[in-house]
Length: 148
Image (tube, rainbow, N blue to C red; front, side):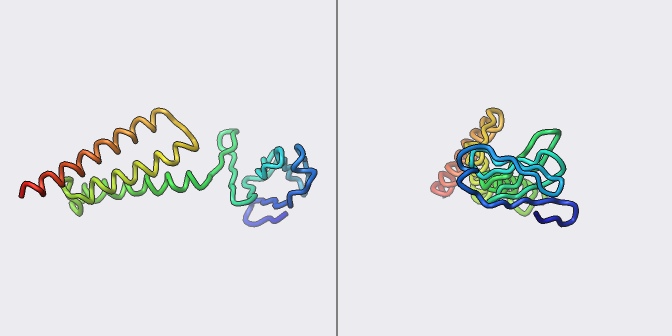
């Protein structure tokens, strides 16, 4: 058990007993449950954040939220789209430029990758069409360049 700045982290080692079924532990006022040896820790009493094998779990509105590698990939995609839009609004990027369509397509593709692991139909539809429109912009760029 490690406590720092009000957060608690439990890092128990996985044993054969944990792999066979659910094991419940109580340590320092924090109850942790390892579910079927998967290695995920559910904090049931006082911990705000528990870490086990790189999976961070937070309680939000009474539910547990995990931030996996696919969420990180999706966040990179969101950042790319936001920065591209900021570049457009500040005049640093032109909407006819190849980089505008490429960054939008790449950002939307990264978000779609994250949606494969945590699916949301509405977000998928938006990102799918975002990719299609960006591909249209890329094709339009190269057709215009071929004419000149």
